[in-house]
Length: 397
Image (cartoon, rainbow, N blue to C red; front, side, top):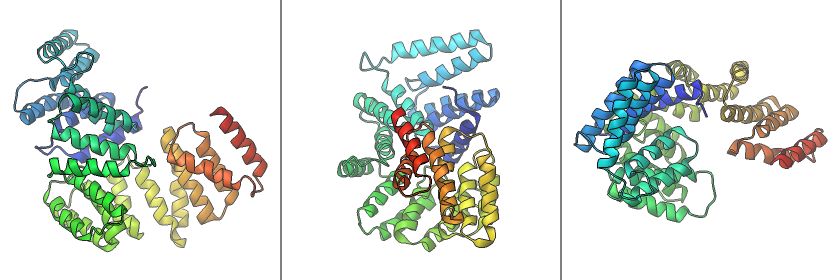
């Protein structure tokens, strides 16, 4: 299935926010994925430049000029030259792929090489909503090559993301895996922050540890991998919103031109219903991927009587867009709540919940909307319409 341009632009922004700081063990993979996205967006020269940077990054990280980690990179270059019409160059890279696969065969005959599984897994973690497949690929890679610390860390983070919304009863096992991964990878602050959040949710006192982690995060280069966004979440929910704002402001003072840190500060202000103008600036800094940020700005405006019109204007502009099904579902769900709470229009709200449920995509939004409709099917003037709608919907399932 072809990935749409809006999703590619959003991924491009996400990858740019990770940064390209040397020492990041996923730098080669980041450049490979950035190259692919640039090609799909029509920027072929940028694509080739990123694929070449990926090869350089792998050489530095692995301290070797060649190895099985270059299979995907050479495959990407073969694919790029094929699409550019340079079949000789494409064939030359395919020959390099064959040579590498012969020289570095997979430890398991019926499996891909662990390096390929790891790259597939990392790409899925970034690119796909199906985190369970990423977890499976990381597991396969680790079974064959258990000494790769960053693979294990990413596997555990993949587990955390895969089971974010499910009640599997495996929380204790997940915490144990996170603790062990943290011991093996003590420099990974993103993992440390996610573990701290889990501990806080269990009711543990984590304030001092959060402050200690904050000092370390501030010393690190700016990156979405630094752990600052989940750390601000820990502060907002388990320390204090004021301290979260102080932390985000301190980070931005150190790096005043970093758009990612402006986004972090806007997140904190959103929790405090402050600074709509900063949100507007952040939206202008992410022109190609500002969908969620616009929703957040609408939510802020909706909380004040004198800016209700601004909120409605943003929502209407978003509702008129040609959106991906997942984005449409999220927007309808949020707008349904807005219509109910801010406009006191119960019927209008239920109609948007029906729109959410109509989109055949399993998600927390669809689940919530179906539950809401079931609750109202016997106590709303729309009861017959809702009952008929649910009957048809559930029959199709």
